[in-house]
Image (tube, rainbow, N blue to C red):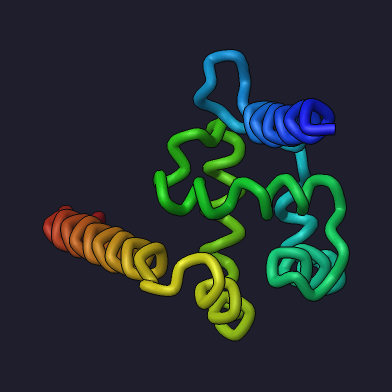
Length: 154
C-alpha cells in the first residue's frame, strides 16, 4: 500500500512538472506559440469576446483554451516583463493591456488587483506613454519651426 501511495505521489509530481514545462518550447524559455495568430483586434472590438477573456482571467467565466493559456502564463509574463513571450505575444499583450488601461479602466482595475496589485505595469505604461507623447510634441514643434522658415512662393 505504501508503494502505491509513493508511486501515485510521484506520478502527480511528474504530471505537474510536465504540465508546466509543456507551455515552453525546447529552448525552455518561450511560451507556446499555438495561439499567436489570435485576432487581438477582433477581441478588442467585440464587447462579448472581451468580456469572455476578462471573465476568464478574473475567474468569473469558463475559459476558452487560448484564454486558459493566457491565464496560466500571465503572472509569469508580468513578473518577467514578458521575457518568455514571442514577438507576436508581446505585441498582442501590449495592445490589449493599453486598450484596457485607456478605454476600460474598470476592467483593468479588477485585473490589476489580481495580477499586478502594486500597479507596476500601469506605472511603466504611463511613463512610456508620457515620454512618447513628449517626444512626439518635440518632433512636431521642430517640424513646425522648419516649415515656418521655408520661403513662401509668390
